Image (cartoon, rainbow, N blue to C red; front, side, top):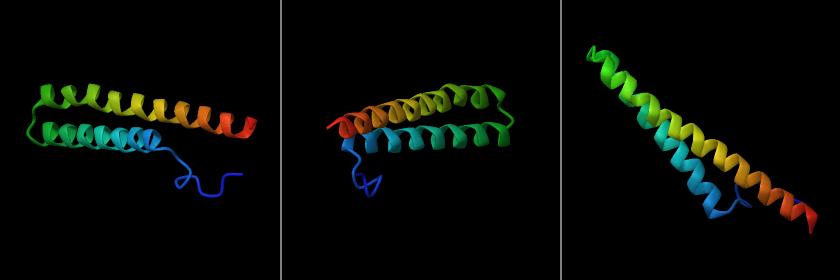
Length: 74
C-alpha cells in the first residue's frame, strides 16, 4: 500500500503540481499588480494564467489517480 503520498509520486506528477502552483501564483501576482496600478487590462490578462494553472492542477489529479489505479490492480 502507499505509505507516503508525496514520496511515491512520480516526477511527472510533481512537475504538474509545481507548474500549477507556479502558474496560479504568477496569475495572482499579476492580478494584484494590475489592481494596485488601476490597470484593469492587466488584471484581466491574469485570468488565463490562473486558468492554465487550474488546468494543470486537474491534469495532475487525473494523472495521479491513474497511477494509483494501476498500482492497486497489481
